[in-house]
Image (cartoon, rainbow, N blue to C red; front, side, top):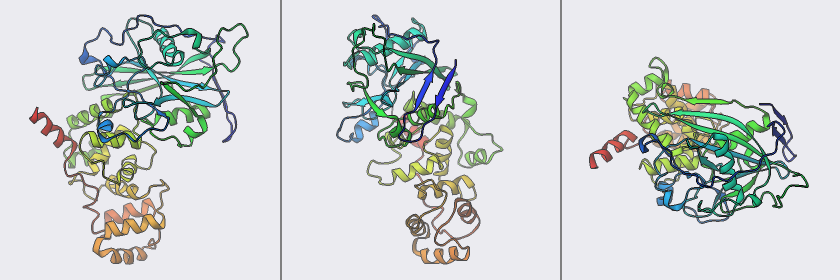
Length: 437
């Protein structure tokens, strides 16, 4: 697979191309495509796909808790089938070079409260290539979201298509699920003989076209998984890795590492890590990196926070550990850091508390962030805290490295051990639910 990429500065046209042998492709409809495979329900799984979009009312807490990414081409009678299952799928990065836009799923109804790449379930009956083309016929070929109408080829634009990457995710039952990513580039100038007469970048019930610059600059709200941003960034910079694997070996850090010792201290066993890993995967799939929106949904769904908590955005920053999204490893360590037994001697706990205040991910607090931190960690002794910080020449601002050292070694923050704690852990709530069922 040959790739080429011409960088451009912000606001200028970016050329991205992945060659497919110079052949133009037309989508082929799958007239009798079944969204369920031959496998048993226990070995399948799904979730949901949604969108950015037209102005809509903010989703209710109930809608947030029940939200899943749902594959395109799914009829309303099949939504329950995909509510809790995982499944092999193909996701589409559809790029219009002419208008510099990317297709994301559209927010149009109660089942689409958030946005991601459109995706389609793979099936053992058809090859991945044919399924990819058939899925595109449904996504691009009609303005109908029921999935019950046969796609109209007359409304499908011509495009080139190529494999972008393959991600394999292993679940606790040892089964791997495949997520194939296809890069689809709409042809800017179809041949004069082409029957295609449609205009590109037209919004439908399924998709809406978002400016590439806005995605890369993180100006698009209601994004379910951070792959939307990172894949677009990688395409611009010609940074591509074909194979990604998330195995059970990655779930629990080595016991001799600091993170491993932290998990031992808070009594998070290997089995605990696997339980959280499965919940993380079933919540996000086929996305794999949490945004603030999908993080909020998880915490509400599992009753770890309430929707009235105004500091969820700050808590997201703490879990993200200075990054723009939350990986499973960061999520696991974040849960451990909020456990009452996670003491300040662990550097991970100190970093967790610091990032709760460093909302800009700068590694240094602003005056307002510094003031908030001193008031919340100093409590009634905040003036004493400021005096001690002056002695270390960091009363007006404090860097991450300074904070970690002072937080762990000095008695400067009286309430440091009490802040950012969960009243009940994920495993306590899960155990209570199992006893009630």
